[in-house]
Image (tube, rainbow, N blue to C red):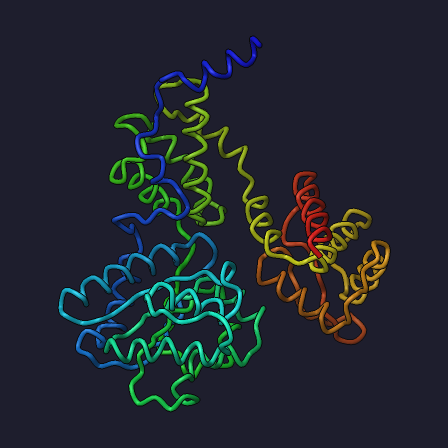
Length: 407
């Protein structure tokens, strides 16, 4: 009973918090300003400017860069501002941003687009091509144009037939439309998923990892302009420590998402101690708690299927058991097959195993490259892209358990 009273007392207390608008540090928050991404916004504006003069055509832009380099927030901020400006000029232009991890197929994406456009299209009984035609006909009736941004397009390209990828950039050839009413922004980590349609790409905009100076400006913007914290509640040196930890020029990842997440955790630690200010010590402890590798692997593990998880676990076990950390794909496949059979699963064939490895490479959890001189024959060499920890292994085991329960 005493514990329950203390618990309720804690919930009902009005103790001081260093936060003012904590949601400004949320992963989905869209800031008013984009420090160090002004040039990319200008590039997007120049590329899509013809639409403001009703020169409706297909503009296909690739936005390329690693995780946390500002791709999503920049594209979303540009798209919303551009669409608003167009409507103010009497031009019907819509912008939509979807993540391929959430909307895994082209059909699901088009269904969501139709919903956002209020197109009133039945989402059953139509093929993907028919769904696209319905969306296009809705735009035709409205005399409107759509800028369709697909985030994590590399994931989409790996998980779907190549025909769906090519259809997105060549729909006007297949459907014989005179006016092109849909443009695309493809957000991805590297260009390999769009090699097949490179002749249809208007431009590529690069996003490099952030430096410590750039991360410092981003974090200060969240602290002051977006009022994530109360005035004076964060020591500047605490912000600088976090920026230096993740800055690409200081051997960090250059990942702004992780830097912002760390700043938020530092605030949580300060609140837990009822400290009136986020100090350097709070920042140090937040950095120690957040493992970049754990975050990266955690994101990937969420979307890996059962046999991909078994493959990943196999590579971890091989590395733990051997003094080397690179293995021919044949060795990995043989060990994976045994692991699959042990739990009553039919092992996948070599071609599928290779596709799984390539997908995990794209997600950043393994390295895969062709063997060089000194190796008999040509084969793919697989290694982990992270150092396995007990936390990571537990996370993978839980995902395997969940995946088996859902199958």
